[in-house]
Length: 220
Image (tube, rainbow, N blue to C red; front, side):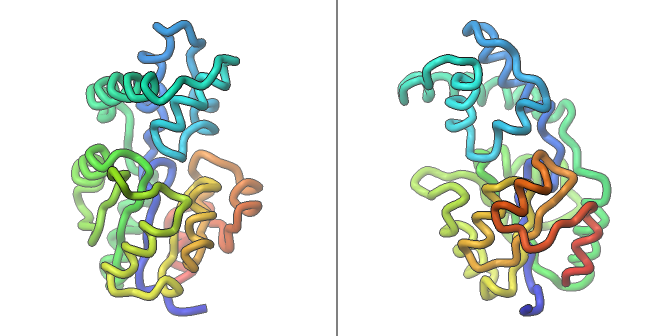
């Protein structure tokens, strides 16, 4: 295995526990439309592929037809207003994440974030909730740029960091993250403290599973 010179992190469920605020904002949008509220555990199974796909999944999970593109766009605007108002309420770094980031910095390992969350929220959350660490790149979803599991944004980050993909670890907590890592030729590291199960991570290509953030240091 190549020495790991850079680590790319997913955000939700990997660096930050954000699920309660996502569920709160979502339910404030969906319940008035006649949908049953989503529990925290349900929401963990629905997120990961971006806000637009989350909207469709919530409707389908409630036995409703998936909304068309125009309705998705309208719901998304409302969701983002609600999320902007509440994302600071409960979201926090997972235990061990600040210590891991500090040690990676001490060792000279480059770090980046790649999320399917909107760029605005991805950037704000990195700045405010992970303020003690400076990532080389913080990237959320952007117009015209494919979302994970397309490997293109991960490969673009590696190129910007000046590191070959094989020298990058990609750390995430969902099938989407593992598929991204494998497609990009990066070390696929599954975070067991996040939103999904070990079985899902293994089934989608996890090469390493870690039970706590500091366990990543054993892979470097």
